[in-house]
Image 1: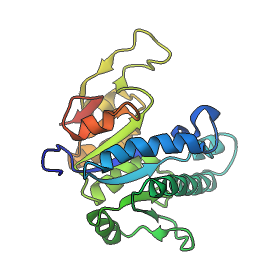
Image 2: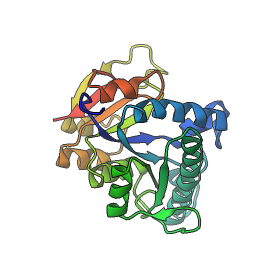
Image 3: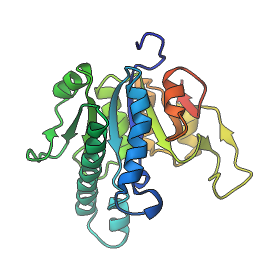
Length: 238
């Protein structure tokens, strides 16, 4: 079923804020359900999928650090927030009939498995959605960097960052009507322009390992079109 797909093994990066919906903070079950329905359309095509979800809807390490918290402590709190989000997405995907496993970089065996690369690969090969939680397990690394790292570890064909907007722009299109969208970017251009869609460490990782990065909308079927090879969003590549 995946023979006609351009990308049959993907990692999808979601922001934590996406799970909050109109509430702005916390987890909105109805929004999580909508996101999982969108992901389900991709999974139904036979695509093998890993997920990395941010924690900004609950706690953001950088924000805590900016307000006087010790950076490492703040980052660990942010990692724990990603576990809450991972469990919420796991619950909804399972309700929709898709088998999942949450693998955490911080050991908490009562609620999820530890992230072990070979185990994660086996889960993917068996058709389970692998939800990578707790970042890299180390402070000072963002979930963007986690997405790049896990995407390469799990041999994904592409990393897809699903956002509110339909690609990468030279400035925020929700604030500036004259914002210009990039259809394609090289890795080096993405780094030089400091566009803010992903951090420099994440861009450097995908560049050094030649993994395509696509930034597109979460909703509207964009991810389906990406895996089918359609030109959607912004492609960052060689």
